[in-house]
Every structure is written in C-alpha cells, then in structure tokens.
Amino acid sequence: MAIDFKEHIASVKDFPNKGIIFRDITPILQDGKLYRAATHELAEYAKSRGAEVIVGPEARGFIVGCPVATELGIGFVPARKPHKLPREVESASYDLEYGSNVLEMHKDAIKPGQKVVICDDLMATAGTLHATKELIENLGGEVVGAAFYIELTDLKGREQFPDLDIYSLVKYHGA
Image (cartoon, rainbow, N blue to C red; front, side):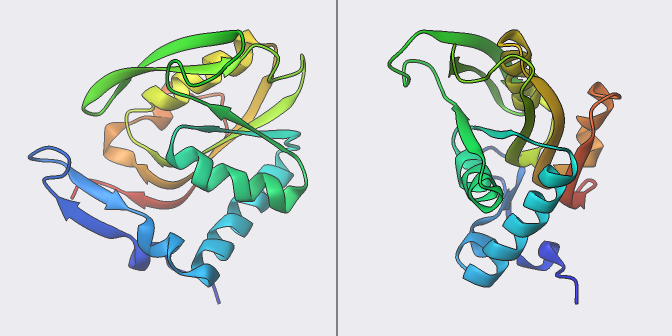
C-alpha cells in the first residue's frame, strides 16, 4: 500500500515569517519506516534517471540526498553555504522564498558529463534548484533530474525548468 507522505508532514503557520506556512518533514525523519520509504521512492526515481551522483544543497538536501546516494551505491556531493568547503570552489547565488544566499561546490566535485540528480526537501520558488543546477553545469555535469519531498506548486518553481524532469513525493497548492 502506498504511503501518503502528506499525512506525516507538519504544517507550521507563520514560520519563519508571518504569512509563511512551513512544511516540516521532521515527522518523516523521526520515523525510520517512513524515512526509509521516502528515501526508497527518491532512490527509485534517481535510478530511473540514470544518476551517477546525487547532489544535495545545504542543509536538508544532505538529509534527503545522502541516504538516496547510499541506497544506490553512488556518491553524494554537498552544495554548501559560503566558506564551508576547504578547497577551491565554484559559487552561485540564489533567492529564497524569504531571503537570498550563495551555494558553493568543490571545483572537482562533478566529473564532466556525469549524470546528476539533485535531491532536496522542498521546491518553492526554485532558487536553490537554480543555483545548484548552475553549479553542476558549470562544473561540466548533466542534471538529469531533481527530486523533492515537497513541492509548493503555487510558487511555480517547476515552470522555470520546462526541460528538467522533476519528481516530488507531495505537492501543496496554497495553504
């Protein structure tokens, strides 16, 4: 029987700012069976896309992407916030639903032509996805898909990537 992951996502009003409904995945993470099931679904998606490596943006992308890479027996590459990586980096800036930031990856993290699936907890405005994809492509990788626990469809992030295959476990539209 398929799991309705939406039943296990907490909705927190006015966090982190008034008017925002924060979709909290920690109830899934706290339940080993749910976490494993969510990981398995994303891993099956990544496998179907021919992923050779998983990239996850800081911080929840680590929580989502690492177990996917482990299940598939492939590598994981973190896309970090500034000044967290010790070697030469590639950088890309992005806007969030409520702010802006920069992501960085080691310049040798992705091999030219390597097929990459990006994994993260949530796609809203797709700023993080845009920056992560830009980093991967600047390093010579091929983004073959993106997988999320949650997609906020009313923010139209998916529409920015008409040629990118995007998978999400749960979709929310509005409140």
